[in-house]
Every structure is written in structure tokens, then in C-alpha cells.
Amino acid sequence: MPDSTPPSTIDPHDPGKGHPTIVVLDFGSQYSMLITRRVRELNTYCELLAPDTPRETVEKIDVRGVILSGGPGSVYDEAAPRAPAWVFELGVPVLGICYGMQLLAQQLGGRVGPGTEREYGPATIEREKENALLGGLPGSLEVWMSHGDRIEEMPPGFESVATSPNSPVAVMADLERGYYGLQFHPEVVHTPRGQDMLRNFVREICGTSGDWTAGQFIDETVAEIQEQVGDGKVICGLSGGVDSTVAAALIHRAIGDRLVCIFVDNGLLRVDEAEQVVKTAGQHLEMNVVHVAAEDEFLANLAEVTNPETKRVRIGNTFVRIFEREARKVEGARFLAQGTLYPDVIESARHGAGSAKIKTHHNVGGLPEDMDLELVEPLRFLFKDEVRRIGEALGLPREMVWRHPFPGPGLAIRVIGDVTKERLDTLRMADRIIAEETQAAGVYDDLWQCFGVLTDTKTVGVMGDYRTYGYALALRAVTADDAMTADWARLPYDVLARLSTRIVNEVPGINRVVYDITSKPPGTIEWE
Image (cartoon, rainbow, N blue to C red; front, top):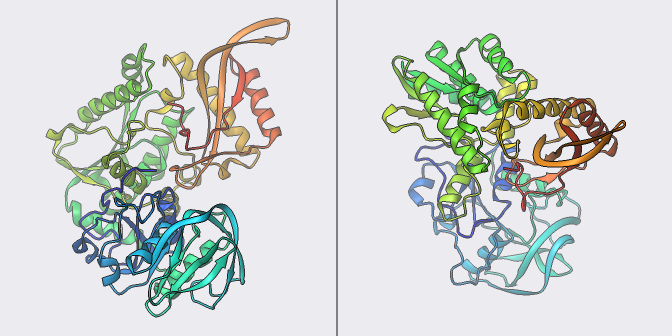
């Protein structure tokens, strides 16, 4: 959770391409991005902005409603962020969630103070008066609370329309202006009917039609790429992941053979992955793919490197050097394509606002400025699940579209300590078993990621009549919506048992398997 409010993440153009848009103002809640995703699940374009976003930027967007997110602060603190004046001057409905509700109250003439009892976790609210936000829902609803402050006096024009045992004002409304406040979080799964509330706000109160679809996005993005690129050539760094492949597929649909994909095979990939990348892009999608075999160069630059950040920097620098070398061979190229996603944009903006750097992002390498290439980023305002839907709509193979995310530095950051070909091959064997067993058990698609980490810890074991001294492998499986937060997966014991048995029996050098049960936060998904 950031210590300060992130700057605006929106581009000067309208990323919604003229579609009716719901704006979410981010006051630092860990759920701000989740609110944005929930609105988009209603086929309505939604943009996450900072409170300091200028009115001129917002006026370029067809704003139909504003949602004020939660946040870690108290609205009565002197340094607490405020909603800008344009929120109330646009004449559109406003929904405040938790901190956002308290902000509504304070800025419109009400009063907020510390609650006599804090509410964290499940609670039950009772509807006191019919209203559009709770329309069609039962009178009694289970919700998820997370607040210490409460509304002491509602602003003029507002009334309480739902209460909880500890919140006389659990939902407040100014029905005439279409202003609503929720003391709980409708965006989390722990509020079972929360999505229905958001649907009521987005569709019924804001009047959007839900016409933002994958097919429409493809048509509009292809036209946008054609306008940007004209008759120029585009270079795309192809990794084989869903992001770069979908970006390449969109650009290929727009400009055909004027797209040149460069696949740098770093030798840090999963079993048969390099061959699959070339087959999918070159044969299935009929793209122009330059396959650069560079395993030896990468491994030479990783020799005896054990520091995780140094690994990332070495891998990034090596990739840039090789990519630059190959890109210069593409005559007349003026554009560089990247599979940048919306979470990357937001996270980078938040880091820019003073948050600590967690790790070097694998999409950030920084090609030399003298290459003078203009960026083409067709996925810049999409979440991962939206990219997958676009991939399906483009006709990409399902196994590619739904494959688990894979880090840019590859298996190098899943090998703790020295990165050698022998240790990489050991991890590749274990990784294949993990994929096979989770797919056979029918749990693969339920997981955000599931992989092994080859630790540098050796442990004593017994196999047959012999004593062994091999490496411990850490199994990591998580569930997530967008990887900003993640929970460890409760895999069935029989699946864990098969994984452990197969890995220890079939992979030389590993004699122990442990299971990582750390969520994000406080941990990260990757170990390095």
C-alpha cells in the first residue's frame, strides 16, 4: 500500500476511445485496482486515476460516473488526500467506498470521526430504505468491513439507507444527485453481492450500456495501430508469453509483414518453450520471426552471480545488447512494440511517487535512446484477464493464452544461487512434473501460477539403502486476480503427495520438496 497518492497514470489521449467511462480515483487502497477490474467485468470501460488528475485530462474522457476508492488514512488528518472539485462539478453520479464515503461526507458538509468500535471483517447490513444502489438485493446482506472511522453527521441531502450493528450509516445516499457512500468494500469476494451493487451503480445509476467488448477493442486497436504506424515497420520483442504474443497478433493484424518479431532464446525457458514460441508465432500466426539462440551468452554473463538483483540486471543488459544488435538489422524500422499491461503502468507510477522499489520489473530494460524508436503499446490499458480474452478472440491457441505467467528473467530467478545449465535442467524437469500433475488434477486453470524454486539448500535423505545429500525444491502455487496481491493455493493433499513423490523419484539432485504458504503481501510471488 503506497505511502502517498500515486500520480495520474492516464495518457494524454483517451484510452477509452470515446466509450462511456467510469473513473476510479485512487486514494491508496490495496483494492483500487480491483475496483477497476470489477467495473470492466461489466463490459464498461474504467480508468484508474489519481486525485491530482487535472480537469483538462478528465474532459477528454466520456465520464459517466466516479468511484472514490478506499485508503489507509483518515479524512480528518491534515495531509489526507481530497477529491478534486471536478468530481462534483461534472454532474455525474459518485460512489464513495470506505475512505471514499468518508471523503464524500466531509467535503460535502458532513462530519467524520473515530469509530467507537473498529470494524474489520464480515458484517451484516440491513436495508432501511429502497434505493437504486441496493435495488433487487435482499434486505439483509453480508459484507466485508475494513474501517476505523465512521460518519458522525451526514452532509445535507444525504440519508442513511442501510445500517450495521456498529455503523448507523453503513450506506448513505443523496438520491437526487446520485451520490452514494458504502462503509464496506463491494469489490472483494467477501461481499457476496458486491458485484451486483457495482452493476447497479454502473448500469442503472450511471446509465452505461456495457458495450466495451473484446471484439470492439480489437477493431478499434487495429485501426489505432494503423494510424500510428502508417507505412512503417514495427519490431516486437517476442517472449512467448501471452502479453507479447497478443500484442504481436494485434499489430500483425494491423500491418501484416511489416511486423518483425525478434525472439531472443536466453536458455532460461521451460521445457520445449523456445520451440513452441517459434511454432506458434511463425506457423500458426504466420509472423516474421527472427530466432536468436543466445543461451551461451546469457549463461556466461550469469556465471557465479548469486545476487537476485544482479541477475536481473545482467539478464536485462544482455537482452538489450542482443536485441539492439538484431533490431539494427531490420532496415527501416521506426517502431518498437511492447506488451506493457495496465498493472505495470500503475505500479511504475506508484514507485515514482516514492514507494520503495521491490525489484527491477522484468519489462523494464530501457533500449538505447539512439535507436530512436517510437513505442507501440496496444495493451497498455488492459489487465491480464482482459488480454487473455483478447487472445481468445484473436484465435490464439488456448494452451498459450491460458499458460501461467512467466517472469522475464526466466528460470534464473527460480534457481537460488549459481545459475548453471545443469541446475536449470534440474529445475526444468521438476517444472514439467508440476505442470503435468496440476493439469491432470484439474487445478491448473484455477491457479495464477504454480512452479518450483530450486533452492541452494542441501538436505540429507535416504533412498533405498543409500544416504543422499541433495537440493530442496520449494513448490509455490498461488491464486490471484492480477498479481498485485496473491494468496497461497490450498492444493489437495493427494496432489501435493504426487508432486513430491514424482519430483524426488524422477529428478536427480532433488531429495526434498517443501510447500510455500506465504501470501502476497507480505511475500512476493517469485522468490527472487
